Image (tube, rainbow over all chains, first blue to last red; front, side, top):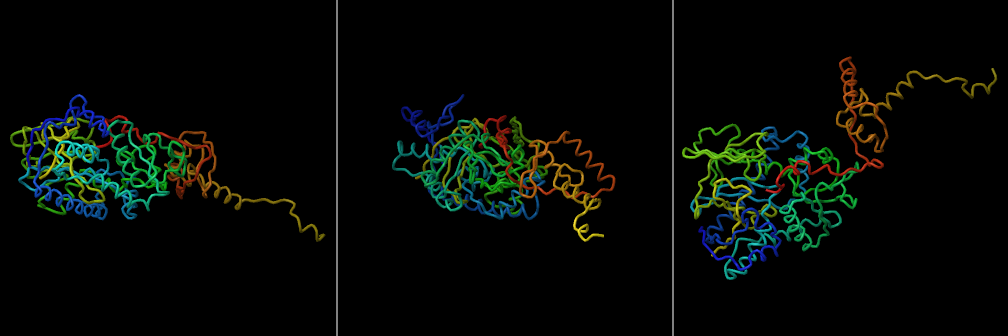
Length: 372
Length: 113
């Protein structure tokens, strides 16, 4: 695994914008092609293998949480439990997720967290870095079948979606909106009828959730966390309506940081896991304290014998988990995190975000990759 | 007595049956003390009605929710046995609301992660 300096394409801003990455440059650049990461085929095999194994372990962990009723430990509200258990039994459609892995090219990839419900950085991983590869290194390869796999999974889901239709909703935000627009694109390419609207335009009529044009919503993809949905005004209706939600409610179990100590309890000393606990750091000398329901690296505390670091934010009132500090290696002074995508619970490709801090936040940068 | 006189009641008085009838009707109301259901009562007050037997029943409530909750509490503390209203769903005429999702996210950067 190497970080290699590279010359950015002339007019790269136009190239990435054409691919839909409208947020490539905010206060600081988000898309960064002045460098890229290079992997060996063997390292890619290790990432793929680890991802597939973690995906299977996560499903086992979800069953364990349900069987052992660990909901309170994970700050999952009582009103959400019937939704979770019903959706777990019914096995409704599921599309995707992203494991965040610490990887240094030496140790086995280590799971930092699993964004199983509302993962973003999808467009840049699936499409934008692919176009970069075609432009700059057309003979090289990239661990990235995300686009094809998304289309294939939508096709597989067609029989479960009423009228072969899937609607999409998100917050009225450019990054979330473009992520959903990209997914809508893949659904259309799979032959589905689609529409897209802000989540606050969903209606409720006493029986059905309704689209802005008043159609009953048969199936809808939402880029909006379940833990927020169940706490909002319409949350009380979620168990009454027939609407199929993608991702399904049971994904609440996996996107919760409480999955980390549960996995460690089920698979102690697994090479792709870091020690993790609910109640405190225990005997760990270097650890990271993460909010159960945190997002984008907010309210994270990193403790080591030589350094303490903390981020601010609005999360943490539901509790924390403590995870062993991953063996982090700097590449040109930067800390990379591998976002390893699963489509239908199988590895599909990676995207890399890096930061000058060991805590990846919403100010991190996305870099393309290739392998040889 | 003429035979025809037996074919028609001159006065019908109901006591027990009437009480049961009132009770049966009351059992359909989520804000009634004997069938109180807090969540359904709050929704019924907000939407001026409730679902019962698969159909929408319009009902205007004069008082805010705490009044009905207090009545329920008094009923139970007085030894009354409550059979909670069963939650149903049906389409309410004219009842159509939006904006029930998105409030938490509105205060954040974005919802994806």
